Image 1 (cartoon, rainbow, N blue to C red):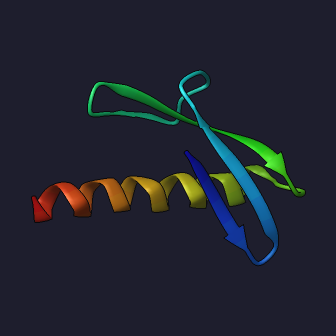
Image 2 (image 1 turned 60 degrees about the vertical axis):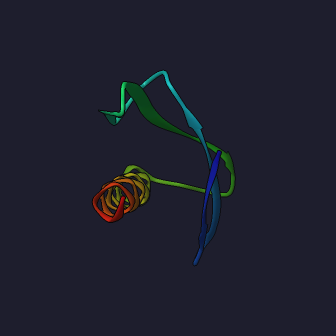
Length: 60
């Protein structure tokens, strides 16, 4: 799975090592594979993914 930010263009690969959090029995970490990224932008991407996971679970 990949996470993409378009402003600036950055692509992260979802990885299980160096995890930001654990959800559904899986570690969720983010490794930059394209673009220039800093910790603040990666933190925002991780928060967005967590929000998407929670909202999808709430709808189920």
